[in-house]
Length: 257
Image (cartoon, rainbow, N blue to C red; front, side, top):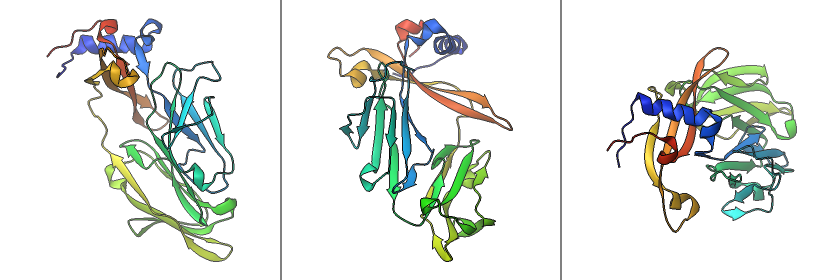
């Protein structure tokens, strides 16, 4: 069912999202974050996965799924120590009272040199960080970063690349070359995509069924809202995004055909 929204409806959604009474009417989505923030790591390194959602104080209320298999870990934080090839794959989490997260993919790699990126798909205007990383933190020198097979940056000593306010022109295939123990190595290739953001910053609604989320025998229609909002940084204005499931009866807004 197509849905049209005017200014009053947007105000109601703002009240819903940011007022204490309104939060209970929204079903938030869990999110997996990585620390360090790279989704490609060397075999033997450590990674911490954190499930963020409803800020539950319960220590055993989180569901973790790895490659579609539930794990025994129930805490919101999961430490992968001495990562192995078996840790490769897709991770999802679900906090109590919050729906399942989108997948996050972890690649555990055996090599000498690894190009890491803060994200492989970002919105226009966001920041992008690249790192040329040596196995076991070995010193890497005479480092050259490449984009689409053309030299982008050279340092004798290793430094990260920071791309602020990324544009679609920053999309491309990246890799790095560097010297470790007097031997020249080339890293893996990464395809980085910069997508255009939603310039009008308007919520987008689509009708879904509660049975899709909770496998209920008596489905109830709700709406999925994609809400974009400005974030002011030190030297730029970027945009954030929230995905919220709204019950029209709780929001008290009129939805037109």
